[in-house]
Image 1 (tube, rainbow, N blue to C red):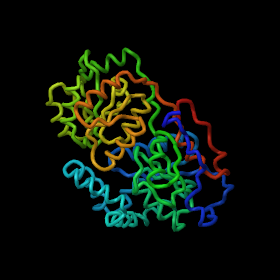
Image 2: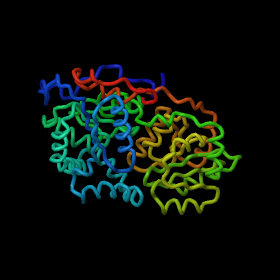
Image 3: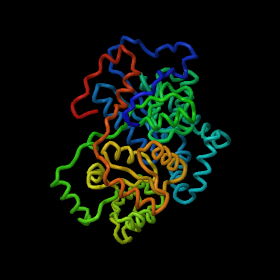
Image 4: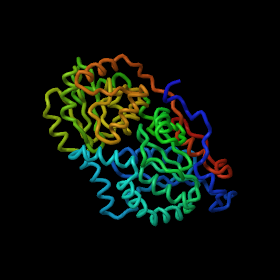
Length: 398
């Protein structure tokens, strides 16, 4: 059984809040209204929002009423700007400082206290969302949302089950809260690392990726796409990604991919400056923001990533082999370590290693793995009286 095929931990999970005694429901259990789920994401990069949208689509298809909210709209604008721009600025211009911050957060000292105060500032708005939606289940797809909602769950201000969906391959402290009822992961590798490092229970829920990623392209469409992009016919293709913000050492990474004998097809996201600079490198094809990444993954022979976020999960669903190279600090390095240790994707640390692992991936089986459905894990926490109203999932919706 592979890391992705292990659907659940071997031991049953006991909700961390069980010692608080029974929780009174916020409304009658025999109501006829459709079940309601509140999903709280965070508009930092695209991965957290992408997972939230896909979860909402899957739940809506079965008759659940889903409300998606952005935690960054629940904090003062200067704080939201700091969270959003501070992340990209520190990773791009001061990577050592970001790595230091990430490591200090794991020790739960001064910076942890600052994060908790930021989360506390969102409580009034979160309480208003909860009162308005009156959810049966709440799901966080962003670490600070997990902390803020966990605090409300711990005090009883939130009486619905709270689930956290980890979009990262590596669990880290900000994802985890003792009052969360279930921590959901994409793979068993994340669950194993989280249990070993933090002692929490995890549920392997599977990837939140649109179904189009595991569908192949017909040969004529592949040929036309290669011609549209301008890919040379003889060289293998490495899809080089840097997230929606275009962060990391992309230009030297692209040069190293060329030296390894591959054509780097670089997704620069919304980073216009990066695209211009990368396009000037010989042998490199640079693209901006694309809505057809699923098609590009069918053209590519391997994915080269530096963060291990949503794009890495999409590649897994597409059956596209992955390689980590020049990972960004903090969660990027942590994700690389988990992926490499579990066999889900090697971490090349030098140009020589990159050449070796890239060519090794060319012979990999590209059959997409069997995965559980995170929406099913969420539905399992709905009260029985409302869960009976759900529709069967339509064909083509996972």
